Image (cartoon, rainbow, N blue to C red; front, top):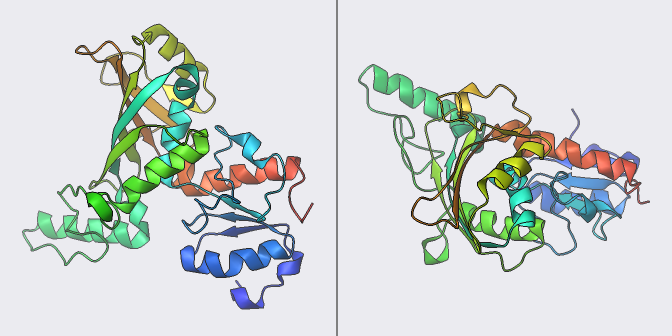
Length: 289
């Protein structure tokens, strides 16, 4: 471990930043100017038009050449699992709108968020008052909080705004109609999403199953038993996106429901950042090339 100010930024081919937006904003451009390809996990550069927002399974061509900024942004973890599951549907059908609710784990708030959840659960189980919430708006143990991130204008949270803006940028669909409610739930790890797509045509369910089945790194649970849908605690493979409860809305033949679950630490920040490095190396966009 070395202090960031003491690292020789001229010797780096790839620099991973995961220390928050302020650190990324200060040091990321410095490393990029010396030739390193900066892969940033923060929100500092995601909506910068000179910075690709990359999910390699969805928009790999965004890194076909070295970006002018020398920086690649890693999307929000809830966005990553959403676009990976929806890619074959958004590209295969004419989607009218997308409505979703996220159920986000305590680990999305970091190690301190997990500790706060577990401490609150222990206190509740022995009849004690929950500790004061420091990392969430309210105590999370045995609770559900319909707010992830600060509430901005029009009552929308920053997390909800990220989902919309990032999904549009990744898909290259600036007018994609998408709205969400982001909810924090008392789960240690693993984000879940209930997603509703409304198509411009009746849903061809067999074709939906086919597209999801052949989509790389997506596991489809197709039957209706209790083993026919994923849950965050029982995920067998933390590196893929799990999709279940796929069904047509009985009140609207153009409506499609999906249940999407993924390990937000592996499918999210950590694994996606590493996957970004692979095309960066193969496309020779590191080291100022």
